[in-house]
Amino acid sequence: MPRFKGRSINACHYCRTQKVKCSGESELAQLRQPVGDNQRRVTQVGYQFTTPSSIGLEGQAIPDRLIENSTTEHFVRKLKGVYSTRSQDISGVSPLSNGSTADRSNFHDNDDRSATSDYTYIPLDNDSNHAKVFVKLPPHSYALYLLGQFESFMGSDYHWYKKKCFRAKIEATYDSSQSQAVDRIWLCCFSVVLALGESYNDGVAPSFFIGDKSGLTADNPYDGDSRQITPPGIEFFKQALLLLRPSYEEPTIEQVEALNLITFYCYSLNRRKTAYAYAGMALRLANLLGIPNSLVAHSPLEKEHHKRIWWTAVCMDIMTCTELSLAPSQVLYDDTSATADCIELSSGETEEFSDPRYLTAQVKLVRIKYHITRTISELRYGNSLEAHALIEPCLQALRNWKAQFSLSLEFKEDGTFSENTLSNPPMRTIASLLLRYNQV
Image 1 (cartoon, helix red, strand yellow):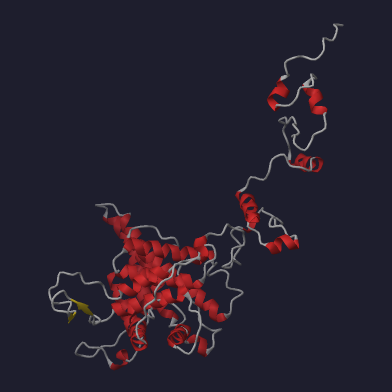
Image 2 (cartoon, rainbow, N blue to C red; image 1 turned 30 degrees about the vertical axis):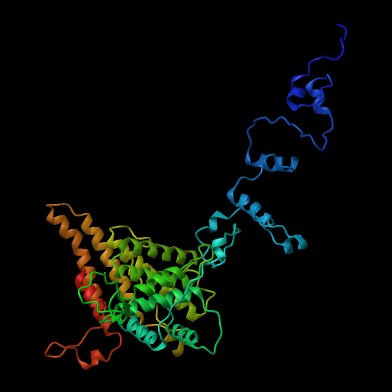
């Protein structure tokens, strides 16, 4: 056996890499030393095959996990813990107490969703800090006139809001004796309603401008001036866009109402792509709210309101997608009625809505129009037999729609509307539906 020559002058490889004083012993001896506060234990991990039964045994044998949970939910919850409130620290409740693994079997069956997120997320300044907007509203009488114009021309075409509640908020807004905070999203809806109501005016609202030479003169839009005439209601619409700040993490039904109104006004401006974007946003927020599946916990009034808002968003989406030859997000393959009979509503609650037959007819008509557009795109040139086989079901669907839509307009012998038709408030909605039917 050779004689021990003493401690080596050069440090071993382990001590040199760890930058510690070398004791001259082997690496195994270093591993046997107790671990201090400023040192890390090095363990040798080998690869081995595991079975589902052995995974549980390994978890019992090794209490500390060598690899931390790397899922996104775990990472976000850890970041959320940094922003935890003082109350959480005092109570000792950890933000990571809830489990992070979701049950995949209930992924598609979880219909009880609410506006509040069921997970933690990092808040941003834009979520709560909204830029101040100088809101300019018309006089009370003119606002009621524009509201009447809107409801007369298109108030029954779709379901935009609860009618009585909307008028009550208007009166509260113009009542100077009541000091209350006005909802920003409601002001957005009100501004779009004013814009749509003004778009149905026959004339241009009077205004004045100061000329360079003549001073204060009346603004006549038909004087041949080179200035471009803005569309009616565009100023109210610009104001609505400034007020629109949807909360994507915690959406509300009022945000869906505002997006539906904005979609229709953009569509009236022939801004088809903009309308398509807003319609898709409204439908996705409605999906986040769980409409129309999670309606069990709502009152009959709110249940009917949510359901009709959903179908209005579906109509806006299909209408804009058809114009751009795109596939809608919500395709209807059956003839399910859009709204059921309002059996559970009282007489006062029924006044919040229009006749459900109008919205049902709108849903079916946009569905037929989409399927006709998709069928026409599949036709091949020169094959008349195939064309007849594809088009005949579409024509039959139109005939069925006309047979189910029992409402009609009565005319006099001279071609004008009868007194019964003119006295019917939703006669414009009936005329609009029949016009769209003939256009399809």
